[in-house]
Amino acid sequence: MSTKKRAQRLIAAAAVAATAAFGLSACAPGSATTTPQNSGAVSTDAPKGKVTLNIYDETGFPVTKDLADEFTKQYPNVTFKVTRDSFQNLLANTPRILSGADAPDLIRLSTLGTTVQDGLLTNLDPYFKAYNWDKFPAGQLAGSRMTSKGVRGEGSLWQFGIGYSVTGIYMNNKLAAKAGVTSVPTTLDELEADLQKAKDAGVLPIQTGMQDGVGTFTLQALINQYGDKQKLVDWMFNKSGATIDTSAALKGATKFQEWAKKGYLPSDVNAINYTTMVSNFTSGQGLFMWDGNWDAANVEKALGKGKAQFFLQPGLTADSKYVAMGTGNTFSIPAKSKNADATAFFLNWIATNKQARSIVVNVTGAAPGGDPSETLPTVASGTLTKQALDLSSKVGADDGFVDFMANSTAGIYQGSLQPNEQLLLTNKITPEAFLKATQAFYVKDLASK
Image 1: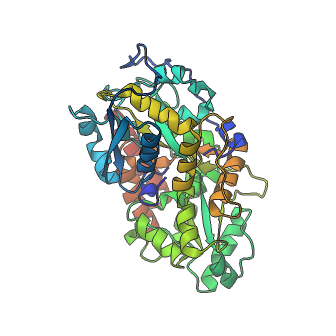
Image 2: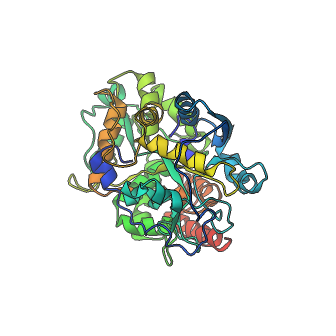
């Protein structure tokens, strides 16, 4: 993920153990009833002749440009045109972009929405077979699958991840010392004790914001600890009968609101967006910040090496299995792409080429994913990026990766989570009402498919 707007995707297996243990099941390719747009023969040969690949990406995700430049060095006949837009505009305009006569060859697509049912994407099953992507951990691609009925996690493959994330908590070591926090917490109770220590010492306990919904990181991190993660996964993957209105979600939402009431969050939390949150934290405002590995290099550059730590959300007990949000930075090939084979070759190159895999890690802080037998890029020891990669391995070993709540439906992030969490944090809605409103929007949004 990038250093900007990554919260809005609410978006990792970094080692063999992590990639091998992504815990979401996936059906075999081609099991959906949807008719693949390109179900015939495909070519895995390197592009021949002069080719220009058009990428439509979001603002603040520089890795695509860096990867494009490296690819052109290795294949000089292939050049790229990268167009960028804000995440909000991408969400609003994706159907128009995909259906237009000048559709790009590759587009950043955080959530599938109705694009599969509307026939707007290239089915990647033939490439899955041709490039032996079956060597990838099945769970790594699970969130990029969808059936013709709109159920995620199974069916045909429609997306490909460029880097895989893991979310956790950043801690400012200088502020920790001021608050008397000597080590990272290993239980939720210890975490709450540290929050109170910080407040008592005049240190803001949590740096976050809800203007654009970034606080959802914290909310979901709490929900993840209180119950069976599969129930949440089923809801995010739109399984029939799934609901967010569970005891685990109620406990998480209640705790989140309690933290706001106790003054653990900024007093102007609803006026802070993602960019401001990170800027505030890296300028020394906040003991903890819930964020992802994509900001590891950014935080370290601002605070200095060894001045911060990155750790996983602690569970109810010290021996609780890790559960953390982590998913791929997903892209899709539009059905109207004029260069589907060349684009798929580029995607496979990203997952298999040594230089490309290093670019993904060094630029985004995310794990490269792909075949677990592929050599992992070397990362300097003692860095936050190295910490994040090691933590990814621990989450993977516990089969603890889950998707982001914001990816549950195409509209739920801006239409429900963001505004209703603002009400939750200002005590204008109860946790029970928050969950009922979230579920009602979810049902309505799915019904509109």
